[in-house]
Length: 193
Ligand code: SF4
Ligand code: SF4
Image 1 (spheres, rainbow, N blue to C red):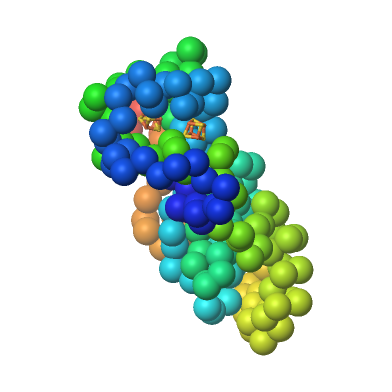
Image 2: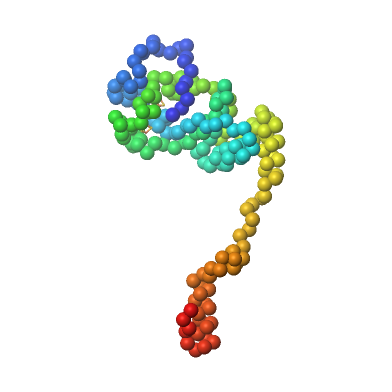
């Protein structure tokens, strides 16, 4: 669900009813032709502070449909552009009446389609955007991130499968068969092992 929008001076006369008191028809009329708020997920996350936090969010926003934004005063959110699985082809909620409380409490009268959302301080759709913002707005954090990256190995140590196997005393099925075959060749018969 998106963050609550700011009240606008041109709002229609206030309707004292809570969102849940609107009838399904009233809700449908308000939302006719729109499915925007059922097409993404936003979750507030802890504000990143250290290089590892930033590295994690850089990784997240490298994925298509994942973005991160920060509001003023500082609150961080991760956003996933993904439609709800209950949204029908007709743009209706397929589980209306037993839909999550979060959806029931959401008031279509002051949704983002009608009112401006809180002004996000910054919105990052790519790792590059987040890095450039860090370099500009939080240079100390950016430098710490660069040091952290520099000090980490470029990749995990290379696996040495043969050495691992020798240490563990394990053999593969293929090796076992090969050994049995060579034993039969030497002796003319298959020896039990
Ligand atoms: S509440 Fe607003 S954003 Fe959501 S479907 Fe209705 S009109 Fe669209
Ligand atoms: S459960 Fe229904 S109201 Fe809630 S997001 Fe999904 S389709 Fe929309």
